[in-house]
Image (cartoon, rainbow, N blue to C red; front, side, top):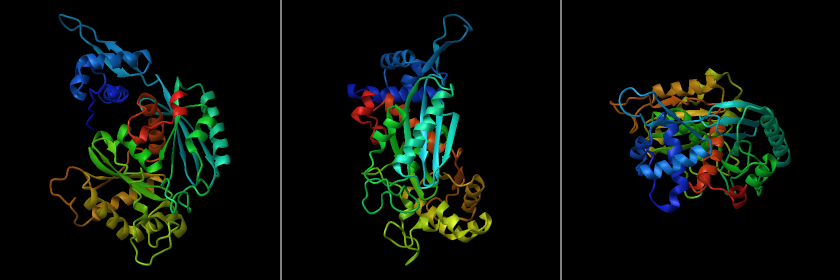
Amino acid sequence: MTLRGTNQESGRPYNRRIVLESIRLKGPTTRGEIAERVGLTVQTVSTIVRELEEQGLILSVREKPKGRGIPPSALTIDPEGGHAVGIHLTPLGIEAALVNLRGEVVESRHRDAPNAMPDEAFALIGEMVAELKASGKHGRLLGAGIALPGPFDVDAMSFVGSTTMSGWKNVDIRERLADATGLPAFMENDMAAAALGEQLYGLGQQFSDYYYLFFSVGLGGVMVHDGSVIRGAWGNAGEIGHIPVVLDGEPCPCGNRGCLERYLSLDAYNRRGLPEADWVAEIAPIFRNAVRTIENLFDPETVVIGGLAPQTLIEQLATLGEGLTNSIAARTNRSHPRVVVASDCQHSALRGAAALAVFGVLSPRFGQMFETTEKDAAA
């Protein structure tokens, strides 16, 4: 992805995030290389590097001289310089993990909690985070991020039905998370968080423009363009699961009929009760139509499929890309398949949720995804 800083004074928090990300992606690297890569002056980069070193987020290593002169210091991420807690809340249960600055899950916890209501969920989250804190496997804790099914703030669709968190309307999720964990708190819908996790720590290193199809209890997806998740005017872009695909089809909790996720989702798979291979064969035409629609709408380099479904099921769905017919993606000069499996299906939302906390603390004004409340910023 392209990382570019800004020379506006108000952009300093954003520049810290950009410099840190450049070091993570390209380290060991020098101040001069970073400046050239992100479009900032060496002086600006040096100031940010000094701040990051003082915060213990990066390491400076000087190689042994190979000739005349002293070689410049090489900068690299200190993976133990900070950790964040990533939390993924689903209608099936709750996952929580300690994630280091390289995006590695160093410790995790799970609770089965079908359709947990807020009081139960945050009580469990508090217990899980307390266990993670007591594990002794973390350095400074930067914050906690939570990913959960959307959409948000849509009266007829938010927190309604079996594929989302029923009973969560009008809950101040970030405030409850901050109270439960004692950490600065951040939140995002799970498909955007999973795409962020993939972008930062997975296949995002290979692609600039791709669509992340999040196959979970429901179905969602987001377009990633030049390293950024496209979120829409109200942050709900990507609810592909609510595109009607079957005329007068199954009723959907959103109020429409024949929505895609009624046929293509973990909920749909469990309701049918078929063996994996039989179910995949049954929904193959619907899946392929969905992929062609995504391709014609967004023109991605590839469609990356991940989510909470078993790895074997995700892999079988990805093979359906081999039978795709024409769309604007049917190019003879393709270098990648039209559908690929995400690099870390099970942990992508967790890692993305943790990244929300890392970037939210370092760059609290970096777009809607990383906004904090006044309480969070002061914590």
